[in-house]
Image (cartoon, rainbow, N blue to C red; front, side):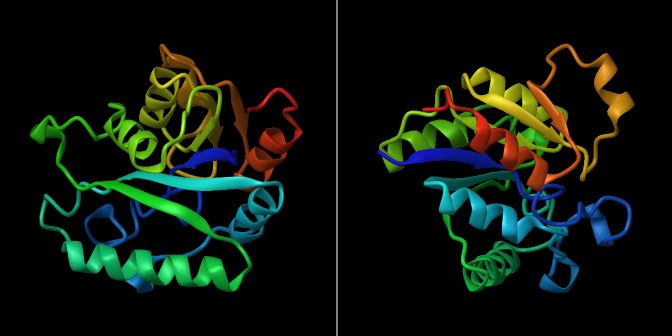
Length: 188
């Protein structure tokens, strides 16, 4: 069985859209900018036998900031560029709901992880989730995942002090996170 890893999108793989894009979302491909070293980090995961599963909240769709078609186009372009660099994401799961929709899939809830387990026939317990925010850490912990918080997104180191649930690891970016994952000999 292949090893699996869960990864958030904005702030982990690409520049977090907060504060510089329209509506604070990546609403068009022109606003999607891979973070330095992100594609190489994904390739390193694949080269070490990991299947990458992306789990991301994209509530801007239900808020009508951008359409499902725009999100699909951004995703297709992202996957194409990742594959051109020699890496592959096995599956992408998005929650497109708004906070007030009270769905089961919006992080910190774990519906997307459960869906991935069911659809892909995997068990996530003991695997890693790499994210850039509090809801990523909460969702990961709820699923029994080891959590790695990257500081390349929306969270600053001082923000974490007040969190009730802390990440297992805090690192600068995806490249550092991948090093932790690969060097964890106890990882399933």
